[in-house]
Length: 156
Image 1: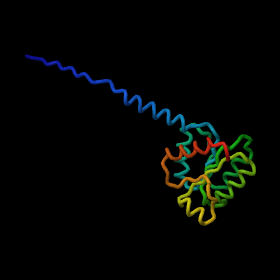
Image 2: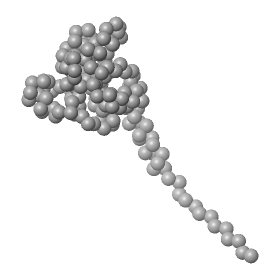
Image 3: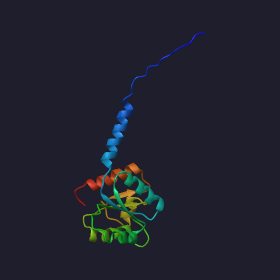
């Protein structure tokens, strides 16, 4: 009876370690601890945004419409670093909400979201040009990049 014994030597692959390290660095660059008020009337989109931003370390206040958002921040003493809001919502539009939030929190940066293109929104005088805008649907990675980009700007 003959028994064969084989040994296979594989090279050490450092590529996976490098890729994992790069992903961790990217995640770290896109994460934060700022307070974000997210206002979205579509529950599935609100849930997705909440998961993505919370996993990246942000402190969230969520609301289903503009009036709900105003009620939730009524007694808030700390800053709201970013208002991330849908444009078209029941009870109070995103634009009207942004005006109300800025009255109480003038330092708040604003980003609007919509299923309509930014050109359509501007063309119909719903929003001004050069407004921070995210068109739905969007990838979680795009959301994180846009949020970080807006928060890192010196100007409102």
